[in-house]
Length: 248
Image 1 (cartoon, one colour):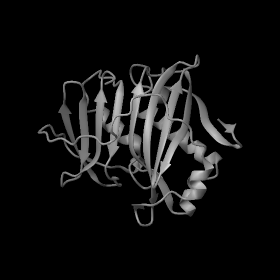
Image 2 (tube, one colour):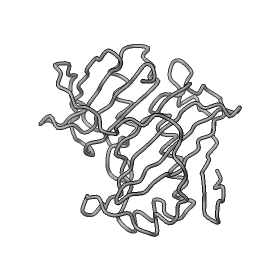
Image 3 (cartoon, rainbow, N blue to C red):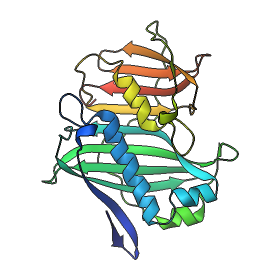
Image 4 (cartoon, one colour):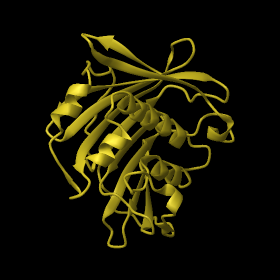
């Protein structure tokens, strides 16, 4: 792990790791949810080194909540492969933060390019608040990654394809007391066609699910992608997801 310095302030953050056996699917490649774990872990490590990590957020009863993300996957990393995850924020605006990720292999070739949008929250009142200057000033903002940036808002859909509801277990809950972002992907993969491998994933989080909540899964087939959503008993979505077999 390291922070490169630029103008006396922490710059792009990098984290090197090895793809573990426990992170791989039957194909011997890292699972999609584990790739999202890499991204989440890396930006969390950066915050920790800057002194605005978990302890800081808990003390101030604040937190970053992921609003949406997109990952374009050139190649899935394989078991035993050394990979480098790089991340940096490219903008802050009001209560929103915008962050890129780049995953590369040992030769420096890109594996994953990702974009993410975060909302800074007052966890006591459960509402967005303006980003504290101490937090914004801790980061060095960089130019955004060269990749396609479609609208972060996803299209909701109506469908008769519904699977039985799933009750949230304790091990899905993170330090914000919500379902961890990657767990939705893990559940959604089970609903995709067998041997389906996404080259692009887009996700919009509508509201957090808590321990014990029931998630109602819905699936829709489109010409160029698969759509999945998890809704509450009244039909209001927790999360919308799109999985493309080829970059669109």
